Amino acid sequence: MGDTEKDLVYSESIKAGKRIYYFDVKQSRNGDRYIAITESKKINEGTMDNPRFVFEKHKLFLYKEDYEKFVDALTRTLDVAKGNAPTVSPTSETSMAAEATATVETAPAETVVAAGEQDEAPAEKKSFLDKVKDIF
Image (tube, rainbow, N blue to C red):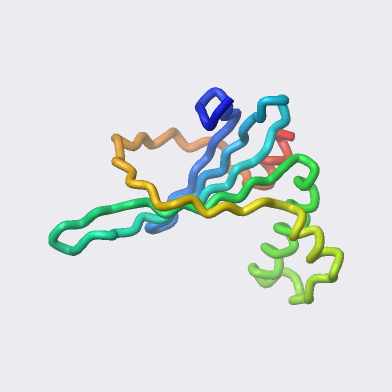
C-alpha cells in the first residue's frame, strides 16, 4: 500500500487562517494503525500581480507504541498553555520520551489546485484526544 485512500482509516481537518491541520489515522501494510498529523500552510511564491500559491507541508507520524506517552505529554502541555497547571520544566524522562514519540518530516512545498471544498454537517463535538482514545 502506498499513500492512498485505502490506507486511510479516519481523517479530520481544522482550518486555522492560512493553515490547515489534518489528523489522519492510516493503516500500514502489516495492519498496524498510526496517526499522521499534517500542517499545510498556504504561501504565495509569486508576486501580487502574478500569484503562485503553494502549500508548505510538515508531517508528524505517531506510532501505536507512543500513543499514551504522546497524549499524556500533549495533555500536560495544553493544561500549561491554558493556564490550568503550573509551568514546570520537563524531566529528563519526559524529554527522552518526547524524542522517541514521533518522527517529523518536512515535505517540499507542493502546488495544490483547490477543488470545490465541501462543508460537512457538524458532528458531536469531541476533543481530538477523545477521538484518538475512541479509535484505539
